[in-house]
Length: 130
Image 1 (cartoon, rainbow, N blue to C red):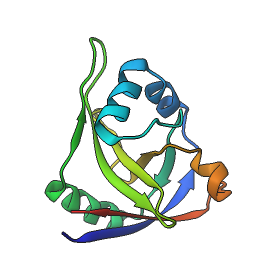
Image 2: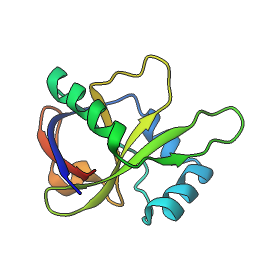
Image 3: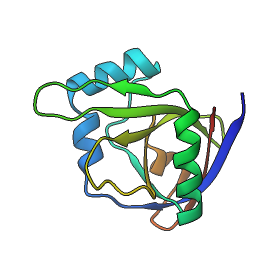
Image 4: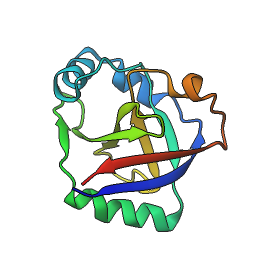
C-alpha cells in the first residue's frame, strides 16, 4: 500500500456539507462504513490545480466507500484518510454535476477547524492509503 499526501488551503463553504452530514441516513452510513460518529459539517479544502489532477488519478486506484442515497438525493463517495496528528477522517466526493475537482470536503469525528485552530487560508496536510 502507498500513502498519498497532499496539502490544501482551508476555505468556508456554503454549509451544504453540514446539512448533508446531519441527515440521519448519511450519519448512520458514516458510522457503519467508516467507524466514527461524524461531526456535523465538513472541512472545505482547496487544492492547487496540479494537486487536484494528481488526486483525481490517485482516487481512481483507491477503494471508495459509497454513501447510498435515499430518494431525492445523490450518491457520494468517501475515501479513508488521516490528518497530520493521526485523526481518522474521510475525503467526501459528492456525485454532483459540475462539482469542482480542486475542492475536497473532509468529514471527521471532531470539529477540525476548532481542533487545529484553522481559519480560512490555513494550510492542512492530508494523507490516505492507496
